[in-house]
Image (cartoon, rainbow, N blue to C red; front, side):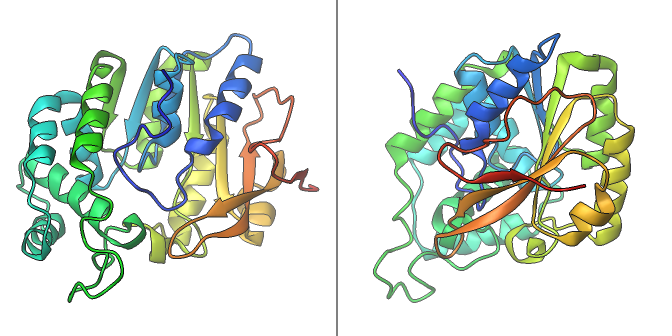
Length: 292
């Protein structure tokens, strides 16, 4: 049975929709990669879909944010306790305040407490943005209340379902560039999907936005990497004319749902050692090559 929603997290700009394209792209390579990796995993929607659909042998999920990394460690390494914590959770403003306090002071926290606080805020905040206000507002006067996206039964089931794959998942908490270096010994057996924070809107959407110097250093790391990779970014001349100039790239349409739903565009960039048969990342969406 195929499950439409695998990740317990809501994530702005989540890329689970790209999973079919990623599966096709990996099948095109010779030899075909068997390990799929995400240096900026977030909700890890694509990774989970590829794993559950048996498109890859193993996945490596990495996120530098302490709360996100703790959450994924709980899902795969402390599954049952985390699922029970979801089932018994009280979802109200008092719990939201406690979760925010834990989330904002992550160091020294146990994974179970930090991971759950992060999960709680993600499910209870507007658009899943960890630093946003709760659904319904601080006075709970909105049409939807704080528990509108907290379906205990479904969410606990998702966690238990994913926990069954623990032997095939590796979770890390590294800087994206350092994580890419850990893939080098795997050669062409690994494939990385790199989806870093946006250049233009990153500070608004992401917990760990990158400075332009960080983006520049990431680009240098990717250019030097022997690991096959695909990268997506917001549309910016800095991406096409500076950071990744000279590499194959295309522009594609994608629906964004943070705050309000709208159709936007993003850039996809491919490493030099990848064979490409199609740039149709999303079914029915426009896509076109960007001139070098």
